[in-house]
Image (cartoon, rainbow, N blue to C red; front, side):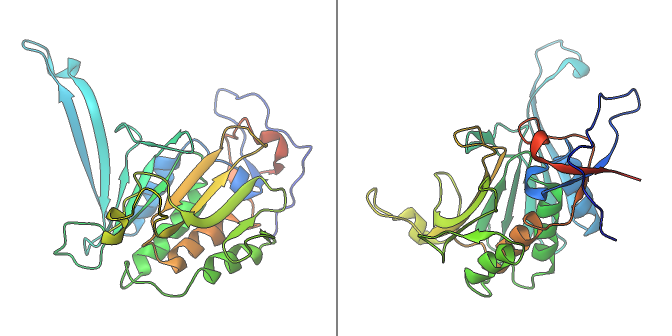
Length: 272
């Protein structure tokens, strides 16, 4: 059933029982509802992945255990075949992507005997949990998670099917939503993006490395990014397409918490 969205329906002050829920859109501006970890962790648990928590701390002599200072904490989720894993690294001093801290890092390999990931993908807070969840469902269903199936057209076709526009100058590598607030591009990846291809380690300073997909939302020109995502060059295009198809979906999503930078641009309808 289609849910009609009303721009005049506003989420009011938060009552004692929590903010009222509303269906909102577009999805790529809807944020993560303040529960990106829970949404993704629930998805991975449903897929049968195992979770491990690694806590690093410091305890002074004669200090009570409950007073120990926790310095770093990483939650790691591993698929049953150990070929794919996801790390919640927000509490673990992650690096910045588009001036935003990385929250989830997802990696995969084709050989369980290899200690190295064939590719990695990175996601900051405020990415819609639905898009990251669909990416993980596609990854879990992949028989060979590091093998490429299809080309860049898969990614672009996924968003243009939902009304996004190809870039005039680079129609084979870039696209944007109709309001020009969220963009997608295939090009040189930012520093620190890990990929298993050894060619990424031999690129000269004046050379461009292998191209990977990047996506980001900039609610207003020159404004801070709402979220950003980066896929290393080895991420299969069909997996990126699963993410972008969900990200650009016109189906509304349920939210209690809206991003301050986009709340006035969201269409909404009361839940129930």
